[in-house]
Image 1 (cartoon, protein in one colour):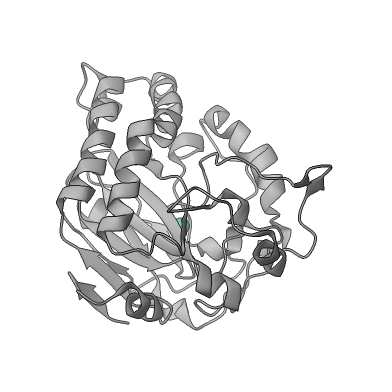
Image 2: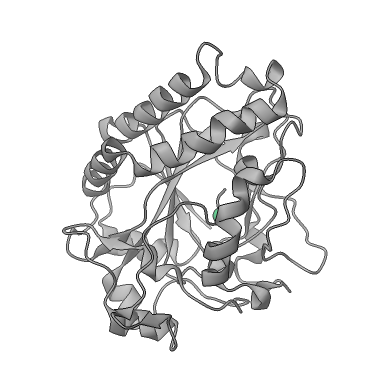
Length: 311
Ligand SMILES: [Fe+2]
């Protein structure tokens, strides 16, 4: 596994390396700083007059949830978020005609077990592809504020090519969309959503973490086993992530090895083409779900919502 810093390679080469488990890290640049800065603005408006990273120390946890629950969809669906994301995707060299992307998410990881459910769920070790993502999914992650190893997320690289017994066979993506997302804001003390998880003890260390400045950008495969590090930094960590997939890889069934993925349904309904917001073609969706949900109009296209498997 290699970590590339500010690598100038073209997207086609970059993707092939990501599918081998390599990670790409980019220094903050105007397009990433603009998106992170806009997130920061919305976060600070929502928590005003408190400092967002410290607010957990003075807010009652129910009040914290009341602030974060509407903040996340406000960021996800804001027209400025969309504009800045499109500019970022082009800036990092993605092909407008072949790249499909999903709306960006905002993640909130509180410190010292203040909140570990619903809007601030701490992700146990997982692969995103256990949640209905295609093996060619690329994950992109940007921190909004400075953070530390103690408030980062970890790659468990031993499992890149080693299968992990897991419950992804119980995960159906459409069921998750119907039930899981709607209930997220109500989950305060524990999280009852049915998440795919490992069913055998894992060797989680040594792990690998990347710490970068605000507006830095991480790129890694959705097939990597990764988890949220229990935050002991004393500050709430805010981050943005989004995912992309390239048409050629989708159509060819390419991407990273899917060695222990047993879920049903697909996230491909949520992706849109960079150039014109067109959905993933039906024939491609059927490669990933031979029996996708249909109604009289044809395929049921679910508008992007905003949860999924974070970091
Ligand atoms: Fe994830």
